Image (cartoon, rainbow, N blue to C red; front, side, top):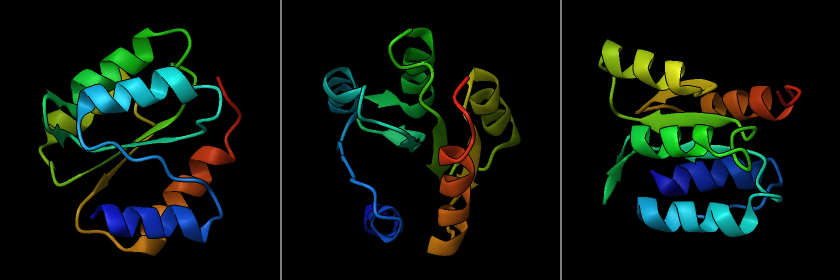
Length: 114
């Protein structure tokens, strides 16, 4: 799935940073937050949930302006609502096409920051 996501990002000409768990993702965000324009986040991540990472991102003044797209197989309505309520811009449910993801990415990167 990360290959499909990376392919969509590459297709748009953006650089792609990747983390295999939540702590590494937050570490990358701490270092590169000025250069990150969008976060693609799965719900199911080793060592913490995507919702916990989303809460951490949106609680930090350095990160909260960065749009987040949840890209996940979790289609439970309550989880979708929880992610949107925590500040996710979009919620993409697997499986999806690269074109679907590109459309969501373009919506987020062309939207003015809050």
